[in-house]
Amino acid sequence: MSDQKFYGEDQLKIIFTREQIEEKINELGKNISEDYADKDLIMVGVLRGSTYFLVDLTRKMQIPFAIDFISISHYSEQTDSTGVVRITKDLDLSVSGKHVLIVEDIVDTGLSLGYLLRNIKTRNPAGLKVCTLLNVEARRIVDVPVDYKGFDIPNIFVVGYGLDYNENYRNLQFIAEFNRPQ
Amino acid sequence: MSIITISREFGSGGEAVARLVSQKTGFLLINKDSIARGLAEHGIEPPGEGLEDLDLEQDEAARSYIEATHEYIYDLAIRNDLVILGRGGSILFKDYPPALHVRIIAQFTRRVQRVMKTYDLNSDTAVKLVKEKDRNMIRYYRQVFDVNWNNLRLYNLVLNTEIMELEDVADIIVGAYRIHAEPREIKDAPPKPEIEDSVFATPAENETEHFMHSSEEEFAHMLDFYRIRWEYEPRTFLLEWDSEGNVVEAFSPDFYLPDQALFIELTTQKPKQAWKKNRKIRRMNELYPHINVKLIDKRGFESLLKKHSIDQEQDDRRDDYEDEGEET
Image 1 (cartoon, rainbow over the protein chains, first blue to last red):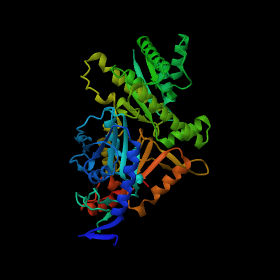
Image 2: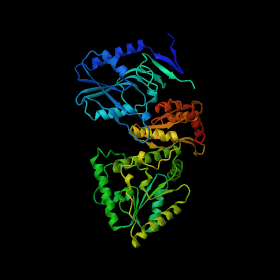
Image 3: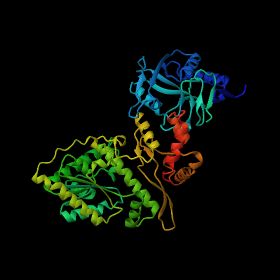
Image 4: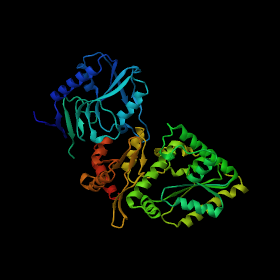
């Protein structure tokens, strides 16, 4: 299989194959199951990018847990420049006294994750940790703890396996570097 | 009870100005030391060496000493005409309309040069001292009054000592005070607008920020969006000196994020044009290894804003144009 794929003008270079992702998720599921054995766990998927990862990760879990979702507004999506971040879809479950694991597709600047952590912390969970499939340390602005991570990647733009370019490419089973030649 | 408060950046010559103003007006000059002596006469001693170094949230003794300081100043003001140097005078007397609040400023490099001369220091030590004093001031104002020390709206008059003799600066203050204070005795004062940002002012709300570049403004908006505190170009780092100790190169990173203790420099220049900034940051890391500074380049900035759009080519052309006017 060539690692270059073309979708119209878009050029995608595969960096993690389906098999590599699967193997990594197996490992993460095992570690998280061990760490949260005997704990009341709520896995919180951050919409929309983490959905594919959350589904596959939870299938590998060997302990009971609950699933919930949260979504926040993003700077890049707002129409004027005066707003502040807000929760657009809140948790349905109460997390007070529970162990919360936030599941992200990618942690880059830490700005949105930092906000989420501050917000959820005020609800008094017994524990609050972060699991991300991809980690881009080179883009970090705000220090955020990453307790479980799949892959470290450099400062590149990636799509696939939940990550999008203008809502496209989320359903790819691999993760690829995205380029649109000018 | 006439009040002139003078807040100054360390090395700006503000102390000498306050002395001159006191001489010209006959008002009693009070500063940190004279207040400490006055309190000591009442048996109140400072809890530690430098109040600025203490953590007021933790330290009950420091808090009550500062409260005593404020009481002492208010008490003196009832019986005397005062020139108050520092100590948050402009905030203590912000609700007293006849008071004139003055801020004395000068460029970082000029302040360093003045400190080198006044205290006979080498440039390294002077830089460290000026920076430390600035940091302490910001910390003191934040802890004691919860305001941004660099918010120039706390003052009625801001004077830059780079272009004038200190004597002239003092004359301007005395003149301004007379104009400011005298009409009040013969006619009703106009209604004062509420100064909303005098308390709880964050740099983000401070409209006095003038960004050099549109990308900086956008970055500031983004930090505001995620409720991250920031300061714009709050510090200048000296990078090179000539054989006589004159500063030949300095660097002011665009942003400081106090909660992250992180300086950020933005560049929308293309990588091959950004080498100068890269070099400055490398030099900064050598000279100030304890300072966290990060360069966000064109690509990083675009990915921050998720600006992978069809407008990108247009943006590139505009950025190239704007970068021509940027500091080097």
